[in-house]
Image 1 (spheres, rainbow, N blue to C red):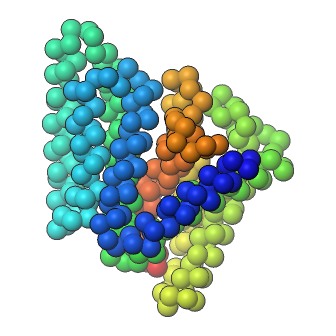
Image 2: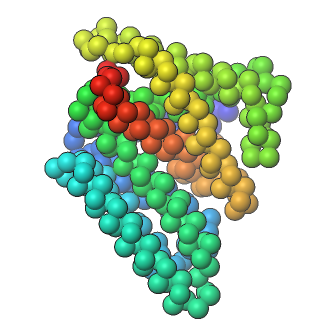
Image 3: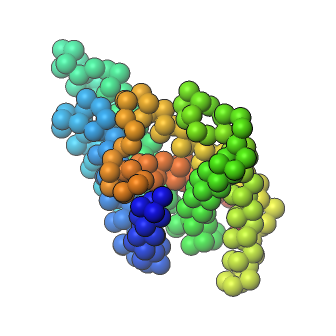
Amino acid sequence: MLKRVITGVVAILILLPVLIFSDTVLFPIAISLVSLVSLYELFQCTQMKKCVAVILPLYIFALVAPFLMRYLADGESFALIAFISAAVYVIYLFALVVWSHGKLPFSDAAAVFAMSLYVIAAMSAITYIRDFPFGGEYIYLLIFLGAWVTDTFAYFTGFLFGKHKLIPDVSPKKTVEGSIGGIVFCSLSFVAFGLIVDHFFGQDANLGFLLVSGVIISLISQIGDLIMSVIKRHYGIKDFGKLFPGHGGMLDRFDSILAVSLGLCAICMFATLSGISLI
């Protein structure tokens, strides 16, 4: 436990400058590095880790995607480039499978593409939310708040009150009580965040929408955690890496954040289309 706490404190100290200077080039650089390390950990689980022809294009797009998201003139341009790139890569991947004469399993190639797309899209979504024109400089912090509050309070609530297993075949230690605790405290933390932003930064937070968003984000956070648990069970590993002593690899720390960033991105888009503001 002490090792986990020390590692967590060090990780927060490293993260703080990135958050403080999130309006500078440091932010997409950090997002790119996290994306690259996450992909590396994913590839180490599969037979694709030595197949340069498959993984190199994915590394390149993971590297440039956060910069394209921030510095292109508009989101539509990024979406178009992302769509075309994904389509071209799928054709390229199919060609590699055909030309390999069975040496490159289609199932592994498809799994690598799907998992990589998930990571790259989620990390790019963090940049999108940070640059969201309606309070993005505050809203993106909800990604980390939602994921970590849910994880922390689901653990402690489950430890203290957990009696009913949630999905034992996927994650034996998770309980229904822990899941509910994570949802409750996440939604409350979103409201508390809104009150802080209101009081100290002169914003006009929509507390009701934040409360509902907290419930949704907590559910998504837990699903993101379970997704990575399924992947680890499939490949027979305990952790994706050893980058963070006591915590595992990058993906072990960002498993929920990946899902939350996509979920919060969808909420931001919905809010914009509906004329509702988060902050």
